[in-house]
Image (cartoon, rainbow, N blue to C red; front, top):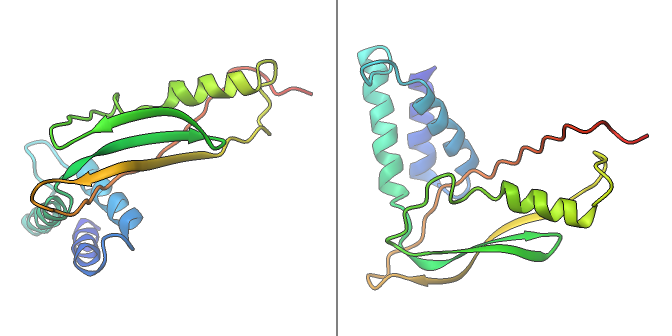
Length: 155
């Protein structure tokens, strides 16, 4: 399974990373989740193919190569903007918008926690400026939303 996933990831990266971005992210996630104690992936063949896929992935997605803003919109309203540049060090906690989404939901629906409420979310990159070298912008991301509500459904 690891060998096949690794070969697929390398192929998608070589063909069209933007077209296959969700498959690539899932494949790389599967590969990373499969690391065993000592940094290996099982057999020698699995380890070599997984490392080839991960190296190719890092060649394509070199990180942020410019400056701009990550902007979160909820129902077309700008909720939060985070500036970035080549020196930005974004950990998962810095890109965690869950509190912002929850606060906006509570503002829009202060007395109602019904599951039927809908929020339209948009994460955009705005005001992007390429770096001095003119390198392109390639960013791999996964937008995941999990909303938990401990209150019972309204009748």
